[in-house]
Image (cartoon, rainbow, N blue to C red; front, top):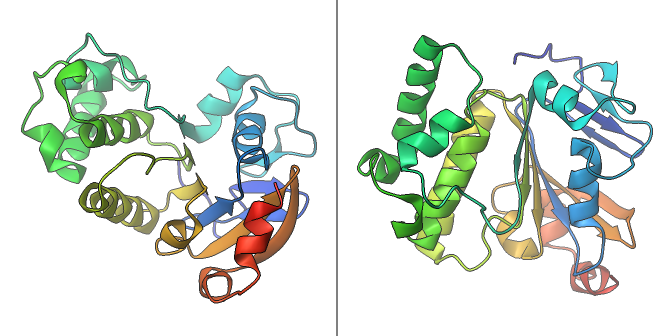
Length: 223
């Protein structure tokens, strides 16, 4: 979904996200990161929500997804018994010809998946499953991608590959909200970051400013 530059992809009190922007949502356990993502998706109450230039506060999960939201929850949650290709096709509501094209696009973004299209998801490594979860979330070409702790338990090499994929998606216009407890890591890919404490934004700054902020660890520990 394309969005005019002047129209925020996501609008909340104290938070706006533009097309092609990666924003890190930082905070310790219980700070509200997952609740924020689930509120945007519609799984939890969240008021004053704007999506793609319209008031989305009263929309259902299905309606918000149809507007252009992709979601990768913590824990990957791929369809273990389906193949890589079947996982992607099952998540896609595009016409058959566009579906095949989008599968190819995801295989180009994640070559390791393209090498194993017929492999059952449960046979993939943890990193490959996370790639599959991300690729599956992009199958309907969303304009806004929500990611919850995508680097959890992954080796640095796999994290680097995931982050490179996120940069490519952002360069193509996808807005990305990345919830992470590992602040230093998230700030290497994000343009901007917010820090949550008890569900409230207590800091909003550029990624470079947050990375150099000596109080960041204290803010992260405030819960």
